Image (cartoon, rainbow, N blue to C red):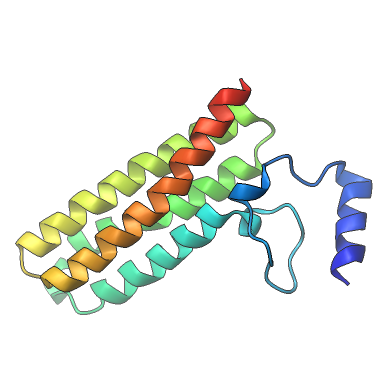
Length: 152
């Protein structure tokens, strides 16, 4: 089934993707169209970070629901969303632009998590785990940005 989907995509779309293997997932999820953002390691890592932040913010005070909680959630969702949007654009320049936005959003998430820690909404251990996830997401994001800049 996967081979049929890949051949269909290659037939109608040309080369499914020209992003090098080191940035791509080896075993994609079942039931997907090849060449989408789900193939990118950095997109999957950003999605895991998003789930972790959403889980962590559930215990934050109700009076923060429309301020810090909302802001950190919007920021973290922006990371995989911009990776996906850039991946769907027509060229490397636009992809690079959206990856840059994702990188900025990732820095915003880190800052907001520090605010939450300082306000004692996050324990030091939980804060540390989220910051490690941010760094683990940043590394392949920086690598992909460097790769695309090198192509230009």
